[in-house]
Length: 404
Ligand code: NIG
Ligand code: FE
Image (cartoon, rainbow, N blue to C red; front, side):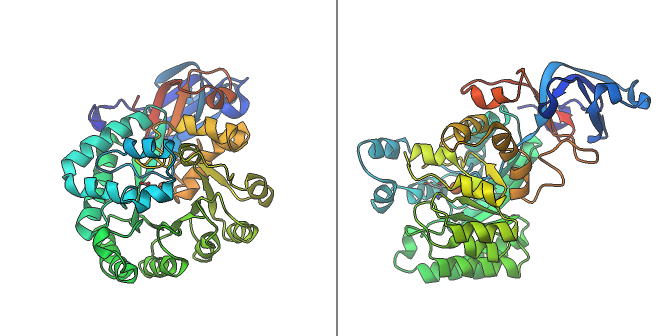
């Protein structure tokens, strides 16, 4: 990995590029001090910019930098064995009850020191970055104690600094009940709300708060307790909602002004209406749907009809979505969830940025915003959804620097 300060500056005039929205026309982007100063058709470029340092895109298609708005990137070990168990007939819930599932990653994460976690997560992050990711959310939730959640979140922050990529950290202390609290869910949630969250927030390690609200995780009442604690600290919330059953989590999250509700395979009409009213983003996670061989589709048509913004993310995690390509998720969002190509591309840019509260700095190429954009070796935008397993990145401008 190259030190970030050795990435060349992207300042200057980018030509020989085409914007995804209007791929037939040559475009130009002016970058000044790491921010976009001007973007539009090359034919409309103001004369004053013509003499800036040139960057030739070689005819590439350009999109905003991708945003992966839901990942569990930092963890110890891996869980290929559970994948095999599920193929032999066990369900995700059965694997979890047999001591596998999230808790097995908790064991491996607790055993690993910070440098080991950093090295393992770095290798995964590099793959996501190679696909054009310029901002990424990283959740805790495999530590489940103050010490080990802190370790995960510190690694997440370090990754952002080391790679010059925007990292938003999400505290997911309420991901699973740690084994030492078996049968004492209420006590654990108290610990999450009264000790873990306030301490980690005070250390500047928490940008948002998430809960796994599900039969095999935490109840609606417990979820609300965590939301209250987040609100008291002024932190935004998000939710793993209605993945395996309709718990009414989305409507609750919407009442707390949630940035996003994620998974939502079993989202109800009331949930959709609540999300519409609160402007909450629906985060679709086709990698988990695919890995679990789920057949219960999220209510895409109803979300679309309600105008709820839909984001798409990897949900990278060792249990249900060992996915390391956000572009592959774009493909799956189209093939499995029937998103249109523009919907899927908005889902990994503008709407994903909003799901993280990053809409002013990411997800678009617009004057005043930091320069985050990707040059792709494709003729038309639909190719970004069409190919899978291809790596069409030609160059990535991340935070005003040419990172790839
Ligand atoms: O987003 N749903 C809960 N959490 C993860 C799975 C975590 C795991 O199995 O390790 C998810 O799918
Ligand atoms: Fe998740």
